[in-house]
Image 1: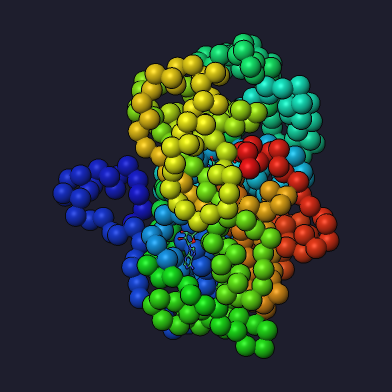
Image 2: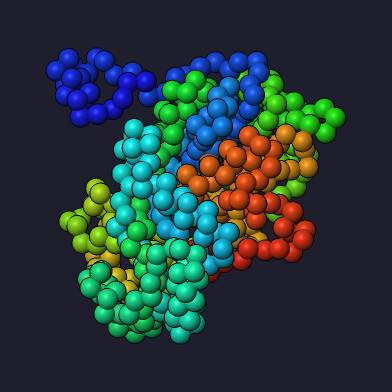
Length: 415
Ligand code: FAD
Ligand code: PYC
């Protein structure tokens, strides 16, 4: 793979850009791999990348039924933060956030990580108590957050109306090193690095069955033929229940649509990310100038990856009191993605009842921020057959044992 650099850009500019390689290859599937990962979203691609980089396992295929990054990875609103409450969550989300800081250099691909700061507004007494508690937990966990008052909120985000009639802004949980990254660049960067290590990313290849013998996985059936493997990683977000059924077990996952929308582009007016969880809305400004807006999940389970008018109405109504300026914006487009919700709003990174088959899912409304850390933990699990310290608490057995990792508040999105 040719390195991307300022010198490469200058060289190619002088020779009509004829020297660029394809960013990743388009191979035909081989009959057998050491490991197959189903799902070329951020989590599947990151798991493959760290399998190769950290564990030297490179005879790997990543199978994708559509196009890489076309699931939730390319549909999310790109918020990155690690201000969770429970220790196992803080560990994996903070690992992830810190990997984001050097991801562009690690992958030699600009993922446009922008640590512009994330605030979660406290608009009720209950939220003040909750966020002060989180700030204290984060201090013990080594995660840098602070509870700030309304004047500091206004200073950081001048377009906010502090004294709203229904829900005045009373303070916020502020994480200065949180921010955003370019979502599809994260998928593209990992894909390019995986392809460079000799891994096969096979798009338009839907897994339709999981084959097994003597309690162990032997391969998968796909729309492009059967492929054998020693190890299988299922990393398909909202379709995890469907794949688990193929493999012969059940997951405690519900699939729901989460929607978002963007406005017409406007001049820079907001250089932080704001989440307002009492009213169920959040907003940031993209580099293009669009206001990126989202709200809660649809109120019913479904697999429909599209937006709906009631969502625009509800979300804009929720946010307009705190951000009166959005009443004058035209909304440009909206979309939806199918998120995979667990009961405790924490992910599953786990062995399964089928030998050699591992699952990574349940990131729900908040997995973009977790892509590097989750990939790191999943690769360790697949390589060693045992979870490492980052994944240990996230086994699926916790639902049987009642060992929940409750993050329903930190998830920050209404369900
Ligand atoms: P995906 O990116 O969905 O990848 C799974 C892939 O599996 C898909 O490409 C799919 O096509 C493929 N697949 C499914 N079935 C099969 C099959 N049978 N065979 C082959 N391939 C298959 N998180 C944050 O941290 N911050 C945010 O601001 C944020 N905002 C969000 C806003 C919206 C509107 C949505 C929808 C989500 C948001 N999220 C956010 C959540 C985040 O997007 C997801 O948790 C994360 O992207 C999940 O990544 P993934 O790789 O697990 O899944
Ligand atoms: O997890 O921070 C998050 C988030 C924001 C919007 C959707 N998810």
